[in-house]
Length: 140
Image (cartoon, rainbow, N blue to C red):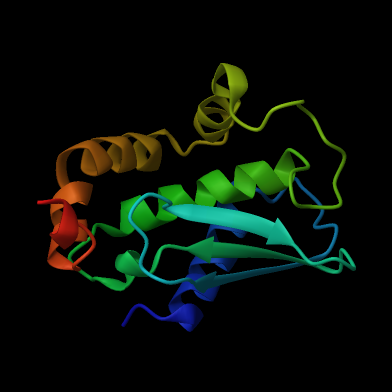
């Protein structure tokens, strides 16, 4: 079952396999957020900077969505963390996405398969999944 424990285990697994070379600067937490139409994931840091929280779109609780898609979304947010966005780590770039820095980092860390699956799935299937979860009913 996909719940916050499942996400937490996924975070630990991704960190151990792909981000092991980075020292965590604070507590890193992940949880499902509400089902959203446009945002797949996000990261924020508490005011006291003791914790960074990754929020994953609640639509990804659906087990019909490939796990690689959830892995890619979570890895994308971890890249922001590593780059110093919403984390106490040194900021590496001025802008979080400019110049394909997230894509390049995911490829460099061996996450190219997850990246490609997520991009293809989002382009092909996200709108339909969102529709089945009632996110586009008023736009049809």
